[in-house]
Length: 73
Image 1 (cartoon, one colour):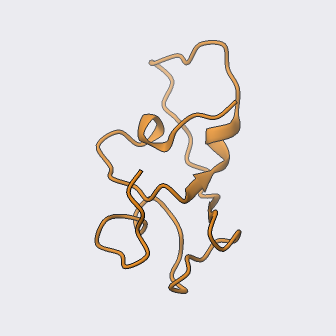
Image 2: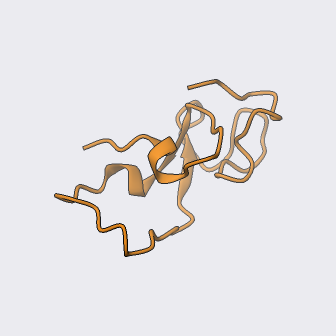
């Protein structure tokens, strides 16, 4: 049921609090020839909305080690 973000965004060091809808979509086996979709729907589990505790947008581009509220996975 739960796909960790590091498998959806390889090479990114993302905050453990970041979530996206794609993490909860079940498929029997992912087809590597089909590019993943980025629906742009992200949220922070700390705030339960699209903004982090610092008031900035929670997404794969922003929720990285340079951010003050970042929590290592």
